[in-house]
Amino acid sequence: MVLNQNFSSAATAQGEESLISKACKESRNPDLCKSTLETDPLTKKAESYNSLCRVAMVVAISKIKKVSFLLAKSLAKESDFRNKSGIMVCTQRYDNALYALNMTAIPAFDEKNYNEAYHAVSLAGYCATACNDVCNEGGLTMFQQHNNEIYAFSSVVQSLLIKLVPADQL
Image 1 (cartoon, rainbow, N blue to C red):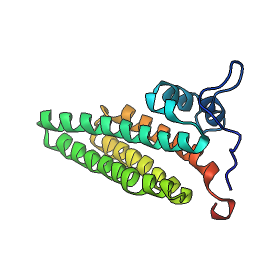
Image 2: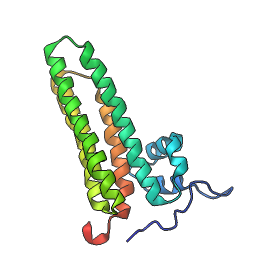
Image 3: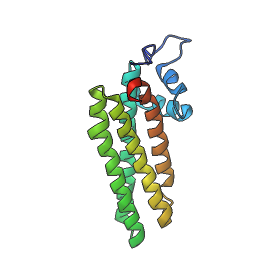
Image 4: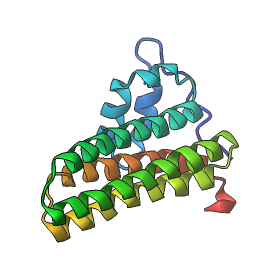
């Protein structure tokens, strides 16, 4: 079932490839995967491929919360009705992404239902692209980079999780 039993420890002996390097090598965006996970202090606790995947979901939640905070600040400052409406829609999309990760992906992962966790992470990434659609229609360019980053990292998390999904569920 699990293809990555050889991933054992985040801290490796000199000359050995780290857990993050091994895991990220086969992800959709190895550079983003590695740079994001290596700089996050939570990954120091990851001792296996599975625990690294769970940490990656928590990192995604943290990134989404930061964008949600920026959206809330922008909403409070915005006076133009159309821009305010677009920001409100994006806020709702990011709330949906947080719900998908906190209420579905993490619990499913903890129950070893990796397929459901994978699909919940996919939904979170979709929420960011839906926000991009709103931004494109309304001329709101201030959040497009954040949306693209959230989508890219959620794709990385998906590419890590897919290795845990049993073949008969693919």
